[in-house]
Length: 253
Length: 230
Image (cartoon, rainbow over all chains, first blue to last red; front, top):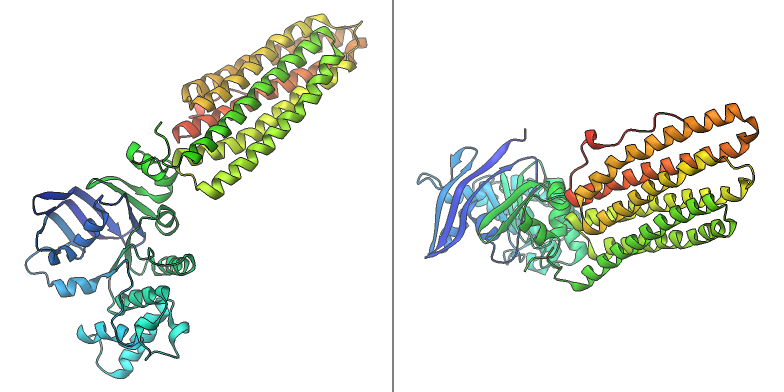
């Protein structure tokens, strides 16, 4: 059995009066990349954001139910949210490097989290993170150029490197390739494949082929419900639920 | 079933089903005509069966091309994917069924009209009819995504096998008693074997149809047994 990293039980999310997530229970494990798919507004991104309490930043949002990381309730009052977000990193739809050098983009997190202070230690983390993000060879000679000067695909890998630098346990990716061309997308997908096993990875994607390519587990969301969750190859060859079938075969709506 | 958001995809899938239905109709009619030609010793009709097999081969090529295009351009999923893959596999088998009918037709001129062994020849058309109906039904089952009909086809294979065993015994007895008929009986035996193989192939197709329709493989116990002899 793969090691369960995060567990959600009967999670409900409300934006004011409106209920966006209607009682979702799911386990995320270390060995498998988990993809969340579903039409716009189905709640997949909202649910992803509950996993590192990004919804806390939305004033009207309210989360019910239980979410644990290694058995620990992440919504417990004692939970340090800054620490949580270091353990559960996030990569967004649009690459959002800091307007600083490539080096500083990576070094910033480890420095503020106290993982390293000496320049030599930071150098090691920067190189290791950029290597894991598959970016090192492309940027090693210009580490002090601005991160925003990189191409979109390189920026996104820089953001993944930035997430990796603080040694997270889980990486959440919210449509990480939707702003990228097919080649940059393929590089990110290959990177996800390489990172699998080292981190628990959850990816939200509108691109079903991408879910099929990168994940081993797929969860289909619809109208705030988790309709079906299973082995990716089963979901794409023989889904159990009519709604899943209609969506993945292009019959939805 | 609901339509695809992209209508052209529906049209392509319909075309695929239409081609397979046509192929099934032609294969069934080839079997029927081959049996009729055998019964009447009609060499002209037998030659027609041989000539018409080219159309079955052409449909196979057309389905393969269309299926590959659908996979490349539409990236079909779930039941759509199973249907396209089943279509690809089915046409290969139906093409083989057509070849068996053609082979039967080719033997018709080789069986001399004056010393025909009437008894086994009388059995063969009934056997051919069952096999031909299996082919027709199983391709209808594909078109209608009808798993029950596919199971019914599988169950009917034992009828063909029983026919075969009966024809086999009859022919062996004939050959022992009338060694002069051995050459003719050998052809009839091959014809019976061809029909028996057609039944097996229809059964294979039924298993593919069942999988395409349900996503499950057909449980073993529902599969027909093989012919006991020869």
